[in-house]
Image (cartoon, rainbow, N blue to C red; front, top):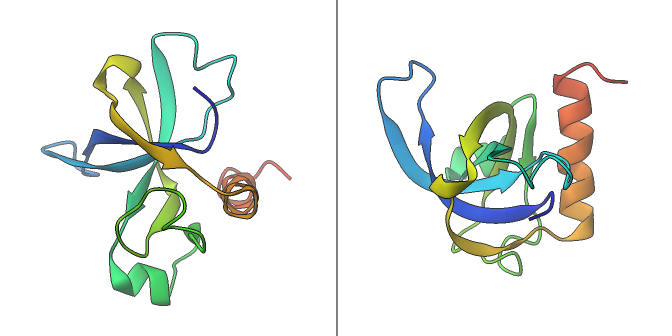
Length: 113
């Protein structure tokens, strides 16, 4: 498993009361992904997020080639650690340009620059 891989997984709402099965993007390093947990970013097909992204949102330009069913946005500010056993069905992988944009958004959101 490597950064940019897309899976379906239960992703908790911010209040942690509920989870929704949705696409997620693996953002943790490959060497971390060999362990029991991975870090993922939420992916949404909300059209408003795609058209007018918020801070940390990355509209995925190559969404169809990545295996997503609709125009989608990766949300670098919506991260979650998840057990690898919870990942259901690999959808695909982000293009190089989309993965670079997600990495840049993560650096900005986490103040790593």
